[in-house]
Image 1 (cartoon, rainbow, N blue to C red):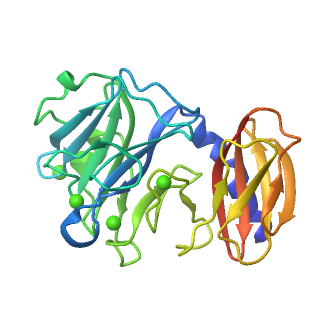
Image 2: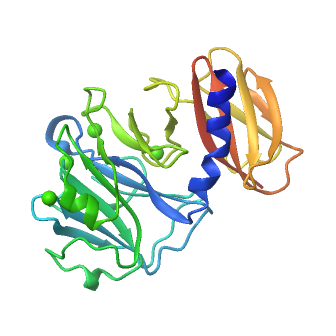
Image 3: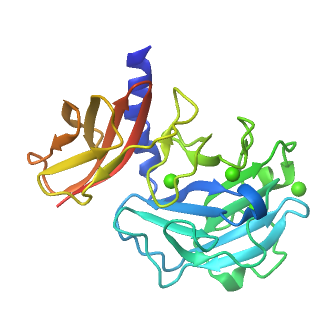
Length: 269
Ligand SMILES: [Ca+2]
Ligand SMILES: [Ca+2]
Ligand SMILES: [Ca+2]
Ligand SMILES: [Ca+2]
């Protein structure tokens, strides 16, 4: 079983990461007055230029747009993330308009197009569509959104009965699962468990000759993969990973710790 899970964790990231820019995480329902909602994009390369892209929010009520965000002039950060969300959410670059991020059944879609192509109440379309996610909170599937965006699955932010404290996070197989929100940082890998309270982080990143794993209480197994999918390094560590043998570039670091596996992007200088 361990091998199977491990294999799933290894092979699939590259199918997903093969897409240059995609919707990586959605938190549509946050505690209190929904003032910590966000959408996280992720790119397969750092500082990906977002010129020519527009993010469009669709309302399941009429299957038409209720907001759009022009991404011209922006790029993902050095870790490949870009966050559009409520002020105060970690890493927010564009603040959500007063229309916010509706709680579903609704959709978020990324197009290679202009904001002017999506005035309010533009019907869902797959023309120039790059990526789309249909989501809800225990809602029946919205077939108008799903068929209109070429999707087959509507994801439930309340899947584990904790919509306030969970977001929808893209997994290596392209699906979404729920866990504690990770705006502007790696998603949890949830193939083999539901959530982890104390996330592990890498430091420094970009790295020179070593990285430190923050958040460990005991040893962890670390495997590092090149973007080709080739495993280039494995170590069992209690804190520090020697990465001096890696060539400069982007890698995926898979950390197996207790009963969980997390996947992190690493930039080697
Ligand atoms: Ca909301
Ligand atoms: Ca939530
Ligand atoms: Ca609908
Ligand atoms: Ca994240």
